[in-house]
Length: 293
Length: 310
Image 1 (cartoon, rainbow over the protein chains, first blue to last red):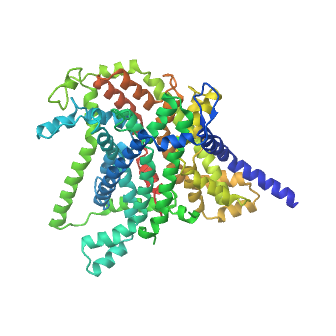
Image 2: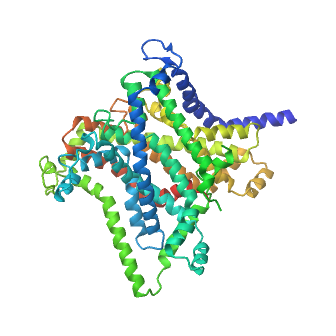
Image 3: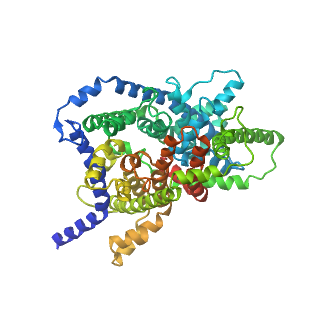
């Protein structure tokens, strides 16, 4: 009887977990391990793969292209993340009250979030067109320098960052707004009774009680930032001359333009290791600043 | 890193509390009709002015895109730029539709996004049911494997996945576009968290009546989880609709391309025809904006639901 029972139970489990597990193994875990295997080879897809040990990893650690791509990603994060966090928080605070027209405002800030990266990139490529773009026309009106944006090595990355901030602002705002709405009124009323000013209430109530939401936004944003690709590919193609090249763009170039499957796989494992490491680091540090009530 | 640590940001932790908070705000905004003192009215007016200015700034790039899409070949490059040029050049849209098979692309995008969404709803909710309700050996470790997979960037899998798909002869097919998105670890988490908030009394009564797990899952759990399922559906649909890199790798036949990919090919062909490029951009945005406006509350509440810790 017991055996029969556990056999039935196993069938039920297999039925429920099976489809998802099969998808996970075939399309995520399998390729992930295959990628590790391929990273130890030299393979152009035309001739059989050659085992080369760790030489792909050695090559990418010494590569100036990869160092630059990493550097660009770090610059991207250093500008994008603080700006999108501060602006998103400001917007969330402005919207966190009974307001007529809330729906209109939310729609306005959320429209870029639902648009595709390809569409957003093309829109900003037009706005930031060096010769005919509106932004440069307006800059000219107030006698500011008119950068070459995506056509200029110094301004290609800033152009990508501007478009990214505009697209993601509404997303960050909605997450933080939901966090704000979860903070109980009683905290603010108690603080008011104690005579705390607006700034002090913001610093000692809003920020600590919002810290789980901020933590979530930071974790997600960092993961996404290391995977930046679409906007770079459309706006600059990683150029001019590699000036806005990023890690995923390097993976795609190496795998699909240069047919270096082994090297691209090694590179993608580097990306995985970075994302894993940074996320783990954030979780280990969260106790220092994230408050869960 | 322990699993309890990770649980704290696992999407969906909020359970049912997030929409309640949002709903509270809606209720307040309607009932706030008390006699306000003058200074409060002044403060509120300033707030609205600031918000309107910010909202219009955010919307301006959309306006500028539409404006460019309706300009003639010379007007679009004119200095100073005109806000609007009259008459409108609708022929830009016709020209774009001739260059890219727009209706075919629209159909492809809809098909791929719809099938992906349905498959993910099914596979994720079934696995979530197992993790939330079934007891089996290895459940804990298996769940940890799912957790760890959350941190695998999709791009790591793309090179082998491309080779695998090519081996199966699935390049330039709908199956090649759809299969990698057949399930979502994020979706399993979202729904598991949701299922855990559902009281067990109903199921226990059903089991006493001799119901199977499948009946309980299909007739009790799923109907009670509409907000969670709606949130996941919106995520899956939007992610699939807007995805670019995987379609770029797996498809180069214009008849199989999705909208973003088709749009990106316009760029190569029209390095200078900005009015037509913007017409294509407008065409690609319209469908998802319609979906957004129809399902606005589910969109925002689903996002809040997934991104929140109660």
